[in-house]
Image 1: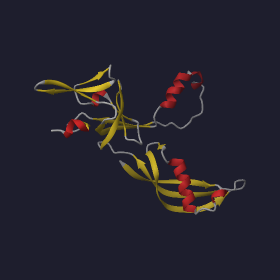
Image 2 (image 1 turned 60 degrees about the vertical axis):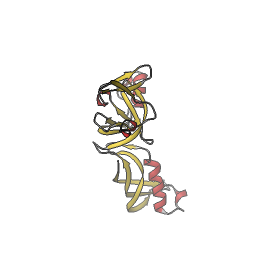
Image 3 (image 1 turned 60 degrees about the horizontal axis):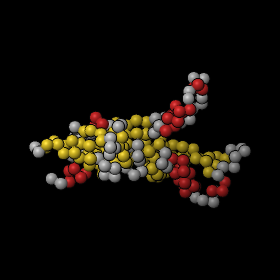
Length: 206
C-alpha cells in the first residue's frame, strides 16, 4: 500500500529559517510542498521518510534565501495492482460504489465489478447483491459507512497541472472548465466480484 520513492528537489530556505538546523528546515519545506499532494505517475505523498544527501547551498543575487539540491525518500500511497484493501463505503451512485480509506477518497467499484447479480436501488440509493440461496434470493445492501474489502484492479493518473489557454480552448464553456477542475488527479478502481470480497459483515458469520 505504501512505498518509499527516491526524489530530488531544490529546496529554497528563507532567511528567517537560517537559525534552524538545515535538515529540519528542509524537512519542513519538503512536507509543505509535497504532503497530501498527488505526484503524477507516482502516487499520493504522505510524509518525508529521510534525507539521503544534501548538496552545496547557494545564495543567488537579489534573493536572500538559500537554495539546496536535496536527495530524499518520501512515503507514498501507491497500492500495487491486485492488492487487497479494506475501506469504508462513502456512498453509492449509478456509476458504482464509492469507497474511502480515510485519507484517500478517490476509489470506485464499478457495477460490473460488484458481486453478481447486483442491482441499484433507486429509492435507497444503494447497490444490492441479490444473493441466491436454496430458499430464494436475499438482498444484501451495501450501505454507507459499512467496511468493505476490495481488490485493486486499475489506477488512473490525470495531469492536473495548470496549462496556458489555447485558441481552441478560448471558445469552451465555463461548465466544461468546471468539470475539468473537479477531475481527481489519482483514482483507484476496485473489484469485489469474487468470494471473500465485499462487505466484511457478509463473510464473518458462517
